[in-house]
Length: 342
Image (cartoon, rainbow, N blue to C red; front, side, top):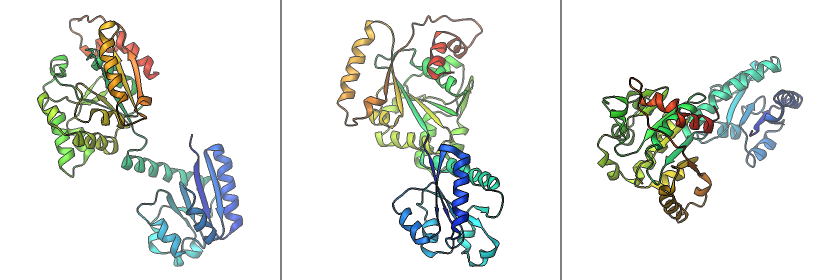
């Protein structure tokens, strides 16, 4: 786990040092604390080292250079004001608007307040940048009919421990017939809104969302011929928007044909499952895909690809039972849960 770097800044050197030591002691190896009693020393250190949390106390929260740094929009650290009644009148109003923590209270209280604010700040930062989000691609070079049942059951398994959004880019996906749904909106509507308007993406996605055995999904495109007419740039922008602003931590992309910019989309994925069925008929398409992949410019793409041979599945229809339930509690569901570790 990455260490959280904290700087405690106060001209009362003894206070800063003891607070930093106590916090580091309580958090063990999760946090590294550095204390400063000189603004000049902190400015020099800050210019060379990254901090996650900066506590500004006496002698620091009224320093013009430090205040300017703390209020920069591009700043990647959480700056907090150590609230001290004795210096309140000297502190710029903008600094008093920063998240604050009462300076003179038990260290345990300071720790609780700091990390309560930090957890909220970190979640907002991840939602804005898309960092920490996982994009998982699924593609079958031989166009296995079991690719989508695998993708859906895998999404259902992952959703037991995280928020998952399933997106199907396949042509003729078959959802209306499989699941007996009549969709009012589909993926094309969501893409159009997200790419052409300053919309609330979370609301846009949720207004078109359906759920299947706990899996949230956007209905696949009904007019599949349009899939080839969307530009590579728009596909990439759309996936990035979903990762940054949809509110989901995991996005599963179930690919059909090689969409415009297909390999660039694979490059956006943190990992991609390349699935085949048992038997010789899938070997040649897989070999051709691997040759194409090796010709791509992104050197690290090969490290993201995970090759899976799906289990042999008997497609047995049980009267009165839905397709998704059959998949979940059959061979493909067992395979997916084992892969997801649930």
